[in-house]
Image (cartoon, rainbow over all chains, first blue to last red; front, side):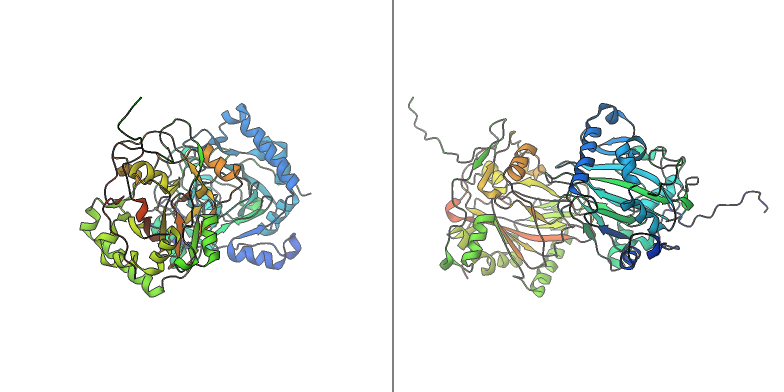
Amino acid sequence: MASTETARQDFYPTRVSDRPQLLERNEPVTRGGVDDGPLDRAALDAFDRDGYLVLPEVFSTEEIAGIRGRLDELSADPTVRADERTITELESDEVRSIFEIHKTDPTFAELSADPRVADVARQLLGSDVYIHQSRINVKPGFVGKGFWWHSDFETWHAEDGMPRMRCLSASITLTDNYPHNGPLMVVPGSHRTFVTTVGQTPEDHYKASLKKQEVGTPDHDSLHELIVGQGREIRQLTGRAGSVVFFDCNLMHASSENQTPFPRSNVFLVYNSVDNALEEPFAAPSRRPEFAAATEWTPVPRA
Amino acid sequence: MASTETARQDFYPTRVSDRPQLLERNEPVTRGGVDDGPLDRAALDAFDRDGYLVLPEVFSTEEIAGIRGRLDELSADPTVRADERTITELESDEVRSIFEIHKTDPTFAELSADPRVADVARQLLGSDVYIHQSRINVKPGFVGKGFWWHSDFETWHAEDGMPRMRCLSASITLTDNYPHNGPLMVVPGSHRTFVTTVGQTPEDHYKASLKKQEVGTPDHDSLHELIVGQGREIRQLTGRAGSVVFFDCNLMHASSENQTPFPRSNVFLVYNSVDNALEEPFAAPSRRPEFAAATEWTPVPRA
């Protein structure tokens, strides 16, 4: 049968079957070498092996205070609160996330281009980068909810049309992270396995999923196989404010609710390779809005 | 005005006002000395100061395996599952707690009298003891819910009529407790402050509260004052299976949900001084059932 259309190859099919699968990643993790940026061989290898890297004390106490001050201003601003890019908690009116801050605010635009973060992203991804998504996450004391286990790439591939795993997140911690106030939990090494999810993406899924994600998250049996079956462990990423966590787009991660009086907040910057720009969604009726997944972008400038 | 009735004195009024209060504890914590049991001076002082004490590796791997085996049998037994003393998770059918096991099962009757636990309880409380409540807690992987902050004594006083704080819990851990699978969180030193709660106890409150407690739990402002205002910290109690955690009945504690595949289970034994037996409830229309708060008891036998 002849066809004029060439079918697009999907390396990571998800949300297309009623049975989940664990697929092997078929592309490299760390792409650059020691001459391409600030990380040494040990750090590059650690990211390759674990799928994440924590750099402590990257930003000074003064710098973090400045960023937090700006965050407080934004959270209190009625215009910001009313913006569709601001997400509030399901069960309270507290701000949970503010998106696209690298475009709307000079403080965060500058931060996203800071060489202490952007040079590392370029080195790990082996190319120039652009911001796929940026946001501030706030997990208030007592009422902050957690995130269930997920691979960011699963959503970015299915709903945003990101073709390959040449993308990473940088989380700049604005508060001290303790084991008890809902820190990031990761499964080291899980970035080499793609866990497909079942079910179809509903229309406008992002409106619900940014508050509490269900479609696009792995089932219990797959998680048990990934963690216990593959002999992996779970690590909590704790530490002082001012550290930066870099993690691969396919690393399985989660976080627990925050029952303590100690709030948690961080700046999330998602760097995508300029060679991995978005195509049409692989498994969704329409793409998410621009603020959650940039189709219009320019490379992050080099310092 | 003359009256033939003498009003009962309530040292810890709670659920009686619409404004919460932080009251000072007006009685000792550690009652026995070094000659009264196995704990040395340092351990007695630590319990007095912190309100809890962790004794690692009290039970051997073989002993724990035996207890877990019995727990698995009970959890699978349809008669046990149908019993009112068995509490299942709100959102699933998994067993969350089985009560009164020291009366219904020989394995747990023997455990509750084990001198490695009961001698410590007698030493700390400075008298013979009886079991106020016993239960097995199971926090399954992935779906286990947490407990919000509370003082056990607040409920035992209000709903069960326990007059004074001469009571403690021993938690025997049957699984390894990690920082990430919802371990016990405590506020060291908080046992010296009684946080009153607002609202009235509804009829048959225990049926809901054993699944998810709301009435009888402290408000955010009181917790903030207790933890941040009083300069306290939060500690997670982690460690290998087979350890025993002793904690004062008025210690503020909580636990988070368990999002990991690693289940958590423990045996809870509440030892009350024979000089602190239950009276009429201080703030409830009727008392909780016998399985949750013993009015019929005999002293735990000495070995």
